Length: 180
Image (cartoon, rainbow, N blue to C red):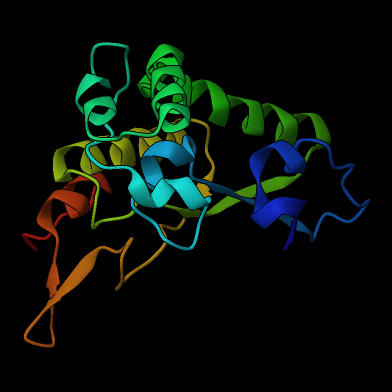
């Protein structure tokens, strides 16, 4: 497995010239847009920890509530920009298509080995929609995937009294059939 810099960022992957070895697979992480996927995260960009109610999909109208929850003018500007970027299924698909075109051009195998959204401050319906949109875009372009993570703040399961409980909305977003 080989990847680009900056935590396996897609943009850095697209700058690589692959090795002349058909046994090397290339991978990337997909957390775009970070302002949505990392809202509330204390270990990421410093001001992300103040974000709440960041919606997905985004539009100028959709971000109004998130903007109203912060006092910092710089954060308000970032939220407004996110709204204007209109992140939605089509925009995600466009980003994933770029990865697929790179892999096809270089005749290499590609895998997205991390994607997800921080559970604690992301509304479940927004998180489920984003995860579904990423997964379906990856599958549309024949890119294998793995969600980050199984059990944790980005995970498929959460803990109740130390017992793992499957988040059924996330399972559905991942296309998993839990009825078998």
